[in-house]
Amino acid sequence: MVIGPFINAGAILFGGVIGALLSQRLPERIRVSMTSIFGLCSLGIGILLVMKCANLPVMVLATLVGALIGEFCLLEKGN
Image (cartoon, rainbow, N blue to C red; front, top):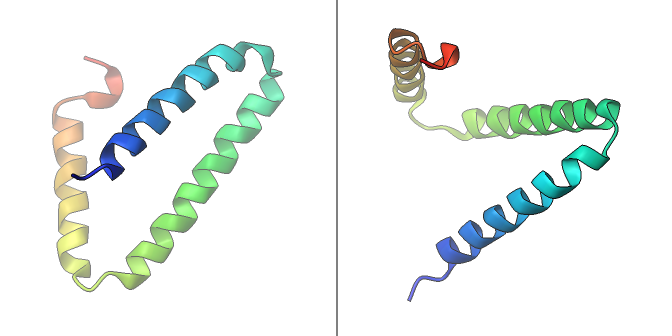
């Protein structure tokens, strides 16, 4: 039986609940800093993964198609 995805889902739910409960107790400057730190970590991980990618054109095409679909559906507007 594969247990990894269940542990991952449980950890995400647990972290989300803890974050929701504690987020209002943190000062605004710390919340902004944490968001920036997580963004930079994600960017670094993304750069490392792109450098390892064997099929770079496929990845670029998938990113482009995803961006076009997002723009077409107005996803950032929330509609």
